[in-house]
Image (cartoon, rainbow, N blue to C red; front, side, top):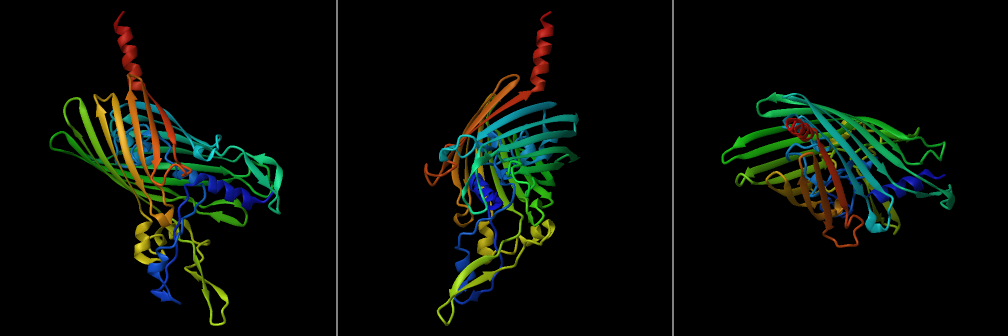
Length: 407
């Protein structure tokens, strides 16, 4: 079986892949850095399922989550926020059907998370992210369809620890194991990819006048080893920098509103940019800008990612993804959310609005979100729904106590 066909189809289905490029001089045969900054050049990494928003809370606010209020889904965005939780223990599960607008019904992301306060100032958390790509046709070495299908599956398991470092700052550490089986164990020449990674996160918070709260957060995620599917291939995982800001205020005793902003950037090296020029003899000559980065270590790739775009500074700025969201709560029981996500046209062109709502009962909470792409209903991610269910153990304890008090 031809692994290239499988991996290409897999990455095309996921659609969560980004790109970076390499540095070039001011001008070469009429090709300037300004021209290169306008070229479509999408960043690609292995296991892009790690970049899909897994929960409805963030999904309803334009995929923001670094500086939002602490909840069970903080493990995915900024695990340090668990230390800020006012509840002792909570768990949740979220379900996202993926790419249904393409007529594909069996691709989905399931995410389960939970945390426990071990002290007033410390907390531990855990999560499991499971991504199924359904049934994919297999191909032989000549590119012809085979008479069987494969069922690629990927997952990541996390554990985290967070604690107060001062009266206004908390920090968290997350350890992660990533498993990616793109061939469904159907080809002995290719093995499942495995990697270990870590997140480092932190949150600064300060109470302001008029019952308002300012939060600033960061999360450097997926700091880890490359992933290999064969002895000759090693790929970068999606190491990412997230920084965010949030402002939440009490309108009155029943109404609260929050405003949030996130900025994301992949910290992986830039692939070389290939262009074609006509030489003096009229022949087409391939010109490569940048360097071969396959042998770079993950740490070296992180630092290079800030200075290696072939379009120079202008292109580097396009590699930052910006998203913003707003959340309104009534009596801490009902929430309405909205947001916007913006990615540069040459870096993936994902631009969409989101809407969502949440309901909190004594024990259970239910959230959902809906995605509306700017480029219309033809987008593969159009009409994406997310559904999330949370379980509050504090509420269960209160209910049990209330029942006991009746007797």
